[in-house]
Image 1 (cartoon, helix red, strand yellow):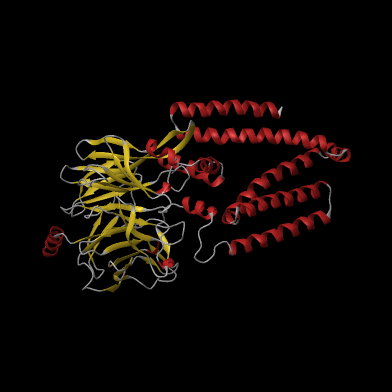
Image 2 (cartoon, helix red, strand yellow):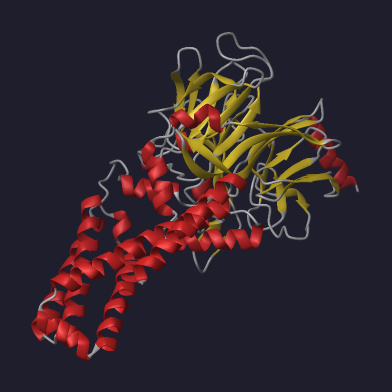
Length: 544
């Protein structure tokens, strides 16, 4: 009977997967896949129960006949016990361990639970004590392996890299070591470039214009229904307008006084590039989609570049999956499918569907590209790019590339083996490319300047020792007109300016902190302006 039920569910859920593919509905496909795997596992469980039943000794079968209710209750209770305990222990302890330790841990849990189950069916203190001792010894071993899993100056273990890859961007970061540092803590006015610094809040619908002394000289603030915080990039235009990306919701243009000039609802994220002369904006956006990786259907957060204007809305969508799919490895696809079956990921899928009516989000393994910067080339650079090409950063593939949008192909690319989850690629006036390299593989960050023709690093900034400068998530860099570089170390809520020889000449810590919990609000990206027009607007503000 149970076998027929499992077969019926299997057929029903195969049809559900098919319906999801035909309708191009990622949620329906994901839900059907989860149920499909569930039906297969249920069928295998029924088969295993039948096999085990045939192998059981006669006296145990007799116990079952006399106490059928108790026998079945205990058995299926421990099936649930396996799933919950393995899931919890794996999430809390084993995910930071090597593959061998994880496998050993899961096997030990199963052995322990089997001892316990068997002892409840046929009472035996020896079995219970033995199982408990094995389990305690294993727990101590896992704690030991975790404590030595990282060597000083070494590389990140593959399991920890997977954990980093699955982390969403965070609003508050730990500041135990520097909680007393706020605003400007260092400034060399002779070497630093005088100007005004712009960055957005991640916990409030606000952005700030900060002078070199750390004083907030102007603030943009706008509360919009459903947008309690902006939590993404803000871009200051030459005329004083502020472009705001409200993550996964909309792009807003505010004037100097925080009045809305225009807005466009769209699942925007990370970055935009304004062509102010043409009043055209290139914005990173995403949508749920089912794509095909070598014939395998894969639900993903499908990144694209939306070209829009305030008057006409979205004029064009430039999708990028087809250009990068051959760079995606099989292991990434396998991880995506296995993560779909984890209980915490299933909960988040339903949460996003209920709240937002979409399911494929960054921080989940559906985010297989994660494009985080876009820039329109403003000139021709022989052997590298043509005016109008796009310079993009694809975080999950450690890739920076130039896209010829007319031909629909990459004309230049770099990063594999050199970069690790980079951000903020920019074309410099000298024709080189500036990149914030997060360095998750080696656990230290750097800012690199690349000669695109030779593909050689011609300048880089690293701390001394290198581990002192590390932002696993986010980060930005800007080459200033005096040759210095302004850097946002997002994972410390810090921004600083360095000279060509690496000397720090301006050092700023986000003053928004939680003293009791030793946390500081992150700085996603910071930009400096010395444009006279911005200063004129500020002076007009002061006169009023």
